[in-house]
Length: 317
Ligand code: UDP
Ligand code: MG
Image: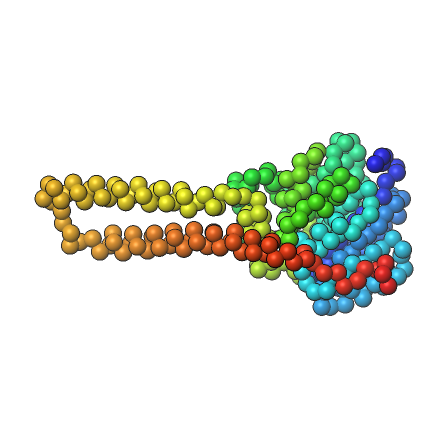
């Protein structure tokens, strides 16, 4: 593969779920950037089982432009499977993954590409310096989530960076080798290595429409990020067990000491008994829960179901 600043094909990957309010605007802004810079390009829109008119709008846009591909899922599989499909389907030398709601502004592409060529890297990951239009608690949650996952995880995930990034053909091809069904895309790309450089930007709010990432979807993302990239939670039970053992041994020594010195007072002790039962009961449930998370993930993986189902591609009709 030999590409240069003025000879490459760019794929833009855009996962869309119920984005009828914004998708035309996004397309317009994307096209302006492509034309102003004279890029050779394709846009891969992935319709993630939208229930509104998103798919028909995408079909209409694709009918007018041969550089547009529309990959349509049989149902809503989620943002990560949609991004995955985009990476698997794209044909460019370079690919940039963006959200459909203009929070990852296409106008930054020239600077991102400049960073890519100047640093001779394989990945340019975009790091959010500022987030507009995100509530205080969500911001706080994101902040601590990235730091928690990083401290637990075996891979060094870039902080405050979503899936907005440029990847080159080496990374696109390597990605296809990852067989897990639940994919945490940014984690997998970070895990790969190669040469990865940051690109800092201020993240605007969503241009139109409402967030499509409900709390359930966010938690699933967090859980995949945490449990697929770390075995540390499994070691939690061992650590807690050892602490419990030490506390138990300490208490046993105290009881025997008091018994042999005739000062053992057995009647009060309700509080310590009940608290110990509750405390260790909770610890046991938490550790069973952690085991359950891993077991559930193993179950998902051994069933070996497809990551997503494509109803149709533009090319096929
Ligand atoms: N998305 C998707 N499938 C889903 C949920 C979201 O493809 O099940 C897409 C959505 O259309 C958007 C991107 O994922 O392009 C990010 O979603 P959103 O902007 O709603 O998330 P937020 O920015 O609020 O975290
Ligand atoms: Mg958004």
